[in-house]
Amino acid sequence: DAGVTQSPTHLIKTRGQQVTLRCSPKSGHDTVSWYQQALGQGPQFIFQYYEEEERQRGNFPDRFSGHQFPNYSSELNVNALLLGDSALYLCASSLEFSDTQYFGPGTRLTVL
Amino acid sequence: QQQVKQSPQSLIVQKGGISIINCAYENTAFDYFPWYQQFPGKGPALLIAIRPDVSEKKEGRFTISFNKSAKQFSLHIMDSQPGDSATYFCAATGNNAGNMLTFGGGTRLMVKP
View 1 (cartoon, rainbow over the protein chains, first blue to last red):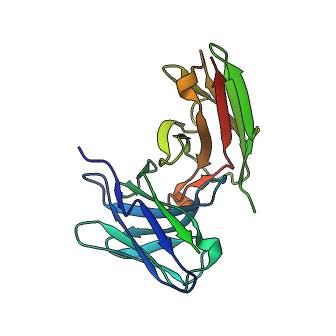
View 2: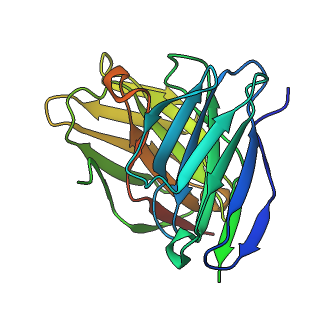
View 3: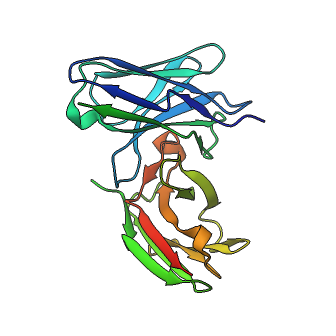
C-alpha cells in the first residue's frame, strides 16, 4: 500500500520564477491538503482539495494556487517566487471528513 | 494568532527516561489532537491522536494526556530511546476548521545514550 508521494524531492528556483509541485495521495484517499513548513517551525496550512475543488484556504496569497485531478493527485503552483517562499512543502492526504492526515516526505524548495 | 502553543522548544533526556511535551490550545471547537514525529529531511509521521471524550490514550511507549477544562494536552514518551530523537509536533483540528491542522511550534527531543 503506497503512502503519500511527492515530487520533486528538491528544487532550486530564482526570485520571480514559477514552480509546480506534485503529490499523489495514499491509496484510497480522496482529499489532499498542502502545508508550508519553514525551517524550525511547524507546518502552516495552505489549502485543501476535495472533488477537484479548493475546499478551504489558509492565510496565503493568491500567488499560491492548486489543482486536483480526477485520480485525486494534486499540484501546488507558486507564482512570482519570493525568497521567503523557501521552505519544505508538505502534502497530506485523508479521507473526506476524516481528521487523520498522512504526510508525504515533502519537497524542499530553495529560492535564490 | 498562534492557536496551539507547544513547550518546551527543546528537550534533552537520558536513555530510559520519560520525555514530556506540553501543548495548549485556544479554540474550544477543536476536537481532534494528533501528535506527529518528524526526522530531519522527512515529512511528519502520525504518532498518536486523541479526542476530548477521553483523558488518556496509550500506544506502546507513547501516552497522550488530555485536560479539556484547561485546554491542554501532553505527550509522554516512556523509556525514551536514542531512536526517539526527533522533532515532535502537536496539532489540533475540528470539523468547523474543515479538518485543517493547526500545529504547535515543535519540540526538538534529544535522547542521550
